[in-house]
Image 1: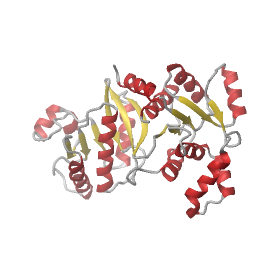
Image 2: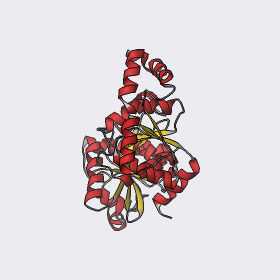
Image 3: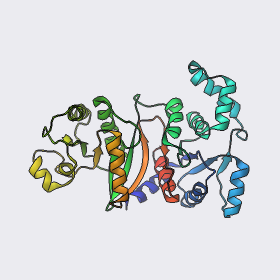
Length: 320
């Protein structure tokens, strides 16, 4: 069974309710049809019900999903009051809360997940990643005070983890170590045996630079928390990925040139690498997926396809 087939099977067992936070999009509606047909999750679609129903009628799509906005949700006033309690130290008032939940479906989704109405939400098909993640960070919160992102890259049917490719621009050594730990745990959750490479332009001291020292320190910190999991760094990509190169460059590396989790030193390198893999090597890129939150929330690219939406919803549901 392939990676996505396993994810779909897990999603079916979880019986999760997932919110699609930006449903005024024909791609979302077409994806919702597939999600319901495959029984991957129960769905709540957020947006103007009249507009969405009109779009469904034009596309001849029939859905079981609930279609809601702030005005049609029966407990919207309760959510507004709860939002005030969460953000009153930041100056939130009840009129401000009502307006925010009415005009920003990502905040409405985050509050619904926070209060247990749904198990997670997916957004980003119509907005920048920051707009999807800000409500999750502010309202749902993180497990250890830190969140990061990863992509699952499918290379010749082999799933790999690339992190961080969408959130943290210049992580400190401590943050980079946390990204490595989160990514190893995410890999395990999705059935990928983690072998963690902290990437650099240097391998085991072949170059001297503050960025190399940062990656080396991150590796040392992560090793203390990932007992029993192969971890190496600082290491160049070829030494982490190609067994013959590993034999020559780092014969003592626990990775043996077979890394499955790649931790990039900053957002520049991670984002560039996943896009090269996707666009030049033809790898399937699933994500960005968010790790470290108390409840599952995931992002979509504004250029996402219908199948991308289906895959990310399935992953979100399987993370319940």
